Amino acid sequence: MHFRIRRHVVQLVRMTYDPSIKRGKAQIVGSVKLADPVLDDELLEKLTFDEVAEFELWVATHHRTNLLKQELAALTLAEQMEQARLWFEQQEEHGAAQQIANEALRSWQALRRVLKQRELLD
Image (tube, rainbow, N blue to C red):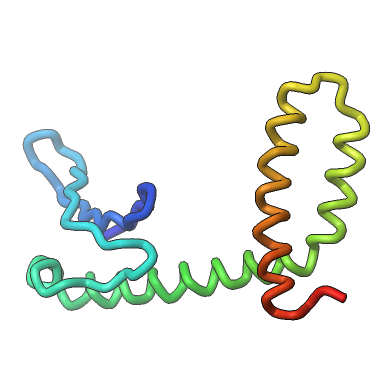
């Protein structure tokens, strides 16, 4: 079994051998919300015990990976901002730079709100 993230859901995909085509065939068994990856009763009936264990391990690993990415992003944010400043200084073409700047500004505003709420700004 493997898992595919599509937008805001995780698809549970079972590989089965198809003798007519002499190779494996992917079958989507079901999907769960990525924000709340809980197997409902209907999906539990379709899965084997090993597949349920594999899904639970995948969820735990995926969650831990996201936490590590978030920590790395926070720890390297100042350095990344400095690198971004240098990049923007070198840009000749304003179209792409303007789009990226707008996205960065929206993210910065959201981050600033959280920092204020947590009283982390002087």
